[in-house]
Length: 381
Image (tube, rainbow, N blue to C red):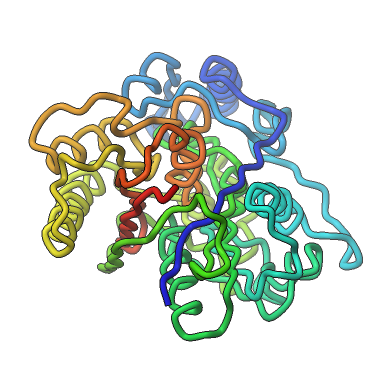
């Protein structure tokens, strides 16, 4: 019951925000906040906010720009958040719509008809609703058969989704499974937080996982995989049914309101994440290479999660025991920023065409949970 990756798809928003544009908007907000709170700052009741810097952002993260669904409101110092118009229940949801765009590209690439697909998995960090499952809506838009469901393992959702699809195929539930990763990350980002306002972008990716008997001649054999999780509060997003209403105080009126807003959006302890996740992921990769008899140095490419350039460089170095050329661990962070679960799939989609038959690579994602997923693949035909 061998499962393979037949194709991938990528949908990218039309709008993009450079570091310079983002910083200009943020610094205008800082000026406004400091002016509005000048008396409290002078009295020592509040600390003045400080400017962000485009060069610092690139040095700290490797990010130069990010694609977004809603550009102007993010840059507006009076809003600083995306504004995505609400749709009626009779219209396709924005998340299902962008997922379908990526899925159609993957289907077309494999020469597959929608009705041939037996399952759809929406695997992402940022779902827009609880139910009905967005995946079932994608199933309806595409006209696929069988069943569909959503799953969330934060930034590792895509690799966990691929392994889940492989299990469905092994169990005889379906022969073709679409794993789609629609990530509107900007909707969960606090653009008023200097330490995080630059991190995320929006995108959608898709992976078609199929039984080898129905897959196209040219495909990627899944030769091994490993999933791990370990609980940590160092990356957290508390937006949910218990606390879906943001406080009236949106951070303009002191520490309590500022903390209240941040707690409902993305928040992380970046230094701890770096310190704890890098060795965890490097160990996972090395152990699985040993399990499957793979020399890490024979991996032509590692398509790593796109969260932070320095993190990826260090993981690659720990795995290979040496400095790694950018071709071995390609980066899309500079153009896309962190796109959560979609990041490693964007890298795989854009930087895999040069593989010859028999060459191997690794798709690896990691993030909140902590969670990490490693999928080893070999090019066939």
